[in-house]
Amino acid sequence: MTSAAMHIARTGLDAQDTRMRVISNNLANVNTPGFKRDRAAFETLAYQTVTAPGAQSTSESKYATGLNLGTGVRIQGTARIETQGSANQTGNSLDLMLDGDGYFQVQLPGGALGYTRAGNFSRSAEGLLVTSEGYQVQPGITVPEGATQITIGADGTVSATVPGQTEATQIGQIQVAAFPNAAGLQPTGDNYLVETAASGTANLGVAGQDGRARIRQGMLEASNVNVVEELVDMIETQRAYEVNSKMISATDDMLKYVNQNL
Image 1 (cartoon, helix red, strand yellow):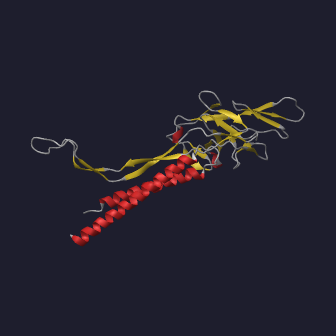
Image 2 (cartoon, one colour; image 1 turned 135 degrees about the vertical axis):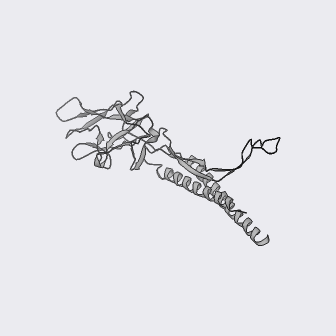
Image 3 (cartoon, one colour; image 1 turned 45 degrees about the horizontal axis):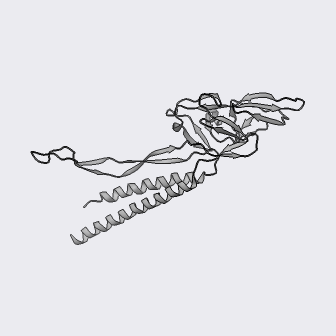
């Protein structure tokens, strides 16, 4: 008797442990603005073909199904679920929410471009529209000194009212980035994603046009994590982990019996 079943169960433990890590990260970010939950995808490991389907069983007949033995499971990858999060009213004029598909573009340290759904922006000492880390929103928006009111339209048009003027003046326009395959964006932390060969090149354009999201001022997009659903997945993962652990114990007991009695 071999320990193949023990090895297969071990792959199950590794896969379920990874899935639990994905679920844990989802729950940890339940209150992160614009966060998109991840889902772990499983795949089988290579099969061992003992008897191929259709092989000769006798000189006059063939096997209908054959005998194929699996060698376990592994996590194929994680898929980001892009469903829209709920809208949270904040009343802050620089809190922006994307209602639909697309991302805000920001300039990361070193000149690289990052993309985010978190629109909790603020104004720097120089009047620039920046993220909470101080990264400048692209295209750059400079708010005039002493501006008393900032209005951002659904198409991203930014207007400001300054002392001495009765009407608001347009000072720029926030654009929305769209990707051929947004699921291919690479997360880097701090709510930022970066472009990859899988995502395709960012296509900046006017909010609300060509399928891009509209911008809603004074709101933030909540995480799309459903706590109840994640808890159900957590329990399911825990039970699967326990079953694989019991499989290892059962296989170990079988091997002990063989060694001691045969």
